[in-house]
Amino acid sequence: MCEFRILVSEPGKGESLVTEDISYLEVQGDGSVILRGLGIQDKIDNAIIKEVNTYAEEGATAKLVKAPIIGEFIKFLKILEEGTYTPELEKQWNEFISIGTKFISNLKSI
Image 1 (cartoon, rainbow, N blue to C red):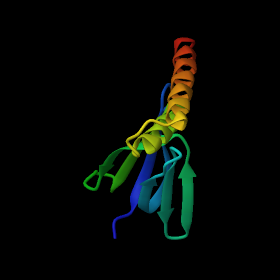
Image 2 (image 1 turned 180 degrees about the horizontal axis):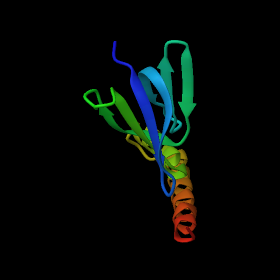
Image 3 (image 1 turned 135 degrees about the vertical axis):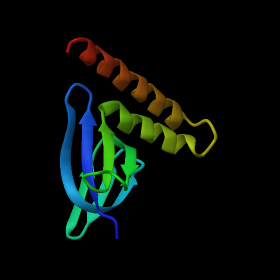
Image 4 (image 1 turned 120 degrees about the vertical axis):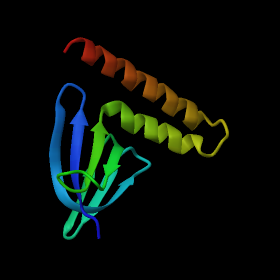
């Protein structure tokens, strides 16, 4: 069985080791990533899997990116999967734009 070290990067904060010994990762429809391992169950909100490397020098590594806009985009994609227009789709798109605008404003002030 392959067990991963989980590294998470956030804009302006760099990358950090969050946990180890994870054998299962899954992106959820709410924009979170579920992490499971022997005796471990964790959840990282507003994240997406960026890279999975089973050949890293330091052992198998999974890199995640975390930002508020990611969760909103994943929620939008989940609704979009239906392939038809709904008011819910438009509402989620507008929420994504709103969060994105706030996120960019915050980055400008860093």
